Length: 104
Image 1 (cartoon, rainbow, N blue to C red):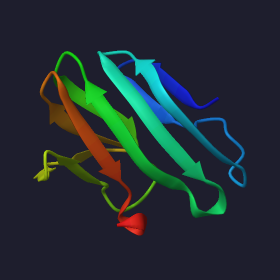
Image 2 (image 1 turned 60 degrees about the horizontal axis):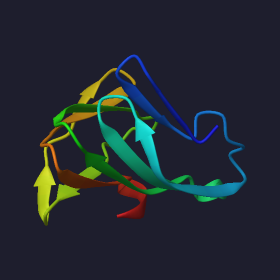
Image 3 (image 1 turned 135 degrees about the horizontal axis):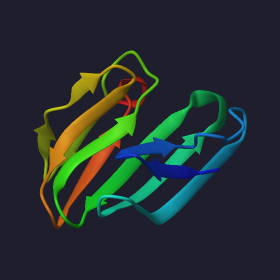
Image 4 (image 1 turned 180 degrees about the vertical axis):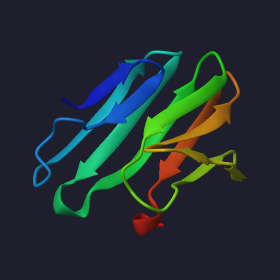
């Protein structure tokens, strides 16, 4: 499974073999989000792009200790942690680039 969107949460590569590379483009997620992402095998999660159609909070299951860097229109977006999840506010019609700290 490449993407799971349920209960207000987006999970990237939730059931993908950790040693196999994969990517997807423009999969729809609940809440009006369109997601593209890549898994880099043993290196883990690569860059993820999230387009917000409707605006609102985007919540991701995030297994890294370090918060991701989220950018939109060359500006850094505030990211918050809530247990195993991270979230950030979005504006409809805007695209966000989510990058793990390990690949920044």
